[in-house]
Length: 325
Ligand SMILES: O=C(O)CCC(=O)C(=O)O
Image (cartoon, rainbow, N blue to C red; front, side, top):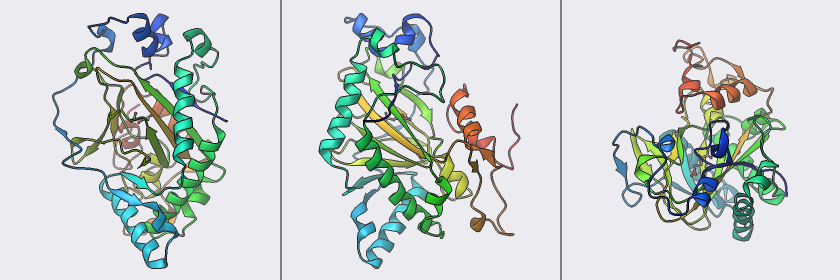
């Protein structure tokens, strides 16, 4: 057992009164809620949603990374293509035991079912010092998985297999556990606003309730839950390191009126004091350095404290973009 950063979605106002206790508290205290409280209503534009039965994120059989040279090459290419075209993919045969995934979900469910007072024992105002609960085995497995995937990403970029791993160094692992209770008016709000992740590779699992949506070619694509699989996405760190060849992709979580959704996103980045910059072998006289170097800690802070979600903190680093103060 180790570390979980627990956060109840839509509870990002650094807390006043009951709202600070999270949306679960609000729902528990108001069992017959029919109308969404005004402060949770978002000015959402009508947007086209592509159903998961029509378009789906690529599926990668990760066992291919341990196969013959030819099979490994094909798997590396498939991961490279998924990173270039989607920024997201689903992995099967990933090696993480289903029983361990289920245990992790139970731990998170247990955390969110503590009383508000009990939860407050874990609370922190500082995004750099998050809530701590535990589940060491899952996090170790997922770290190993992130390193294997990073090896494939390095190779797909034409770098040495251990390039991303070495650039991560001792690295950091950040866990966001999200609890989305049923919502009386799900179409008037979001569980989690659109954002990209700041780190390298994020590995996401969830219970059996759908809600993740990924931006693809300007439209939102619903990602269906497939039992036993994990969803991987690349974050801003990989976009910068790849000098823009791979793009971190905006994603968001919607809520529903019937069932609680739980998701656990584990992000993997370098140590806080690492400098994030494009990989030097990917930058030559023909390709300009597209992102200004920044300390990972500073990037994370800028991203976490940005009032506007989406990819604006990353755009501010682009060398052809004016930085807004
Ligand atoms: O709940 C989800 O599916 C998305 C979670 C996520 O994007 C996050 O925690 O950053």
